[in-house]
Amino acid sequence: MKSSEKILSKLNNLLIMNYEIEKVYLEALDLTTDDNLKSFFRKRGFEGNEFGRQLRGEIEKLDGKPKQLEKLSGNFGRILTNFKNYMSLNLQSDLLEEIYRLKQASIEKYNALLREINLPLSTCKTLIKQRDSIFSHMNAMKRKEQFVV
Image (cartoon, rainbow, N blue to C red; front, side):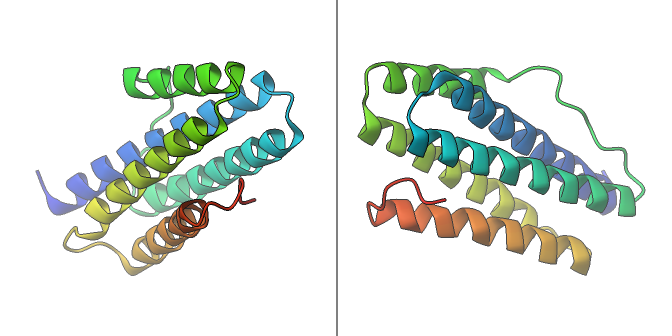
């Protein structure tokens, strides 16, 4: 596989992950009545949408075809189920831990792509900006701040 094909494949995988994260947050938004959670899920869902838009642009710059989300993968389906369970049982600390793990997995995917050789500068800048935004929210959660928006 050529380097550009490998980069496009990984960009599309990252795009699909952002679609899935957006979908999880937006479905969780519809399930909660807590205003803080609603605000958090709405903002994180919007962020996932914006990240996806930017990633689609990067894929198109590289003459690739952005993939579309067909359905949630098993992993993200499990995450959504966990969100539902934690919200119904009012287990906010467990919900925060699940969100933290989701952010950590996202950062790992971004870092894997950033290690690719011949990554275009504009793509690299976009990925770093997105990864750092996720990392910032993750660090705020680490400090036990409540649902950083």
